[in-house]
Every structure is written in structure tokens, then in C-alpha cells.
Image (tube, rainbow, N blue to C red; front, side):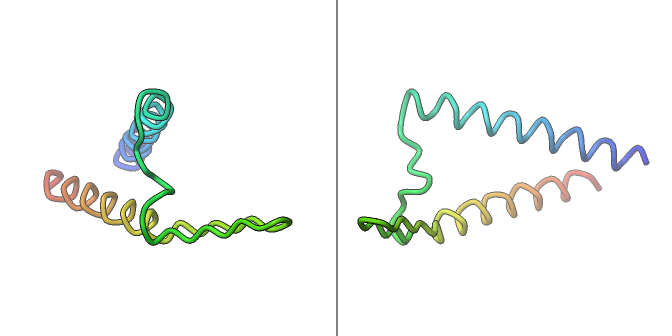
Length: 75
């Protein structure tokens, strides 16, 4: 049970840091999340469709790399 608690605490801290980064990053700069080449955006009179395929892939690769590094350091 201790290992599950540690993982949940680390995940919560990581999400909080990510949220803070996005909050202040949107005020001071441009991260480009959601506006990468390959993200599908269709805007018409009565229709708005947005599918961030490239952003999803980038976030997935970053999270996979972080989880891989965490698993290597755990044991």
C-alpha cells in the first residue's frame, strides 16, 4: 500500500506543477500546445471542431519518457 500512496502523491505533485506551468506559461509566453502543425481545427459558422492529434502525440511521448525514466530509477 505504501508504494501506491507514493505513486499517487508523485502524480498529484506532477499534475499540480504541470497546471502551474500551463497557467503561468499562457500569461508570459507561448507554449504552442493545441496549435501545433497537424492539429485539426475546423471553424465554420455553426461548427467548431478541434482534434489535437499532434499535441496528443507530443504529450504521450513526453509522458512515456518520464515514466520510463522513473521506472529506471526505482529499481
